[in-house]
Length: 136
Image 1 (spheres, rainbow, N blue to C red):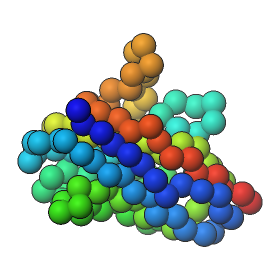
Image 2: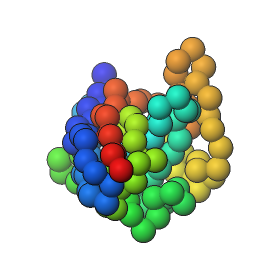
Image 3: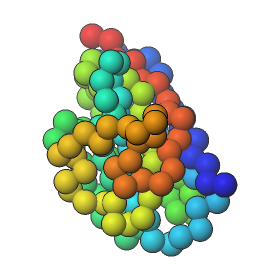
């Protein structure tokens, strides 16, 4: 059973930084796409940053220049370094993993509404999220 466990969330002030981590286990494919998704209070989940098994990355406009996604394959861990945080960055952050074909730039251009509470975006597995709260 694939498990994704996020950590690193917390409460900080605007302008500060946080580093989120996502520990992945039991995902056996060497070809994959991993991503971070943000769900602000009362809003739908949106893609923030993606990285594939080749190391190619892409970001939503809201995170470009502030967020950096990276991975440590040996540790099976995904990271999201978030700098210069803003109040609008508040919310739950989820990591997800799926086939490499999910890593397309158009992932940032739409909302993939959940079906029976399950989100898509081409991802097969989701973590339970970590909460980020940014105060002004």
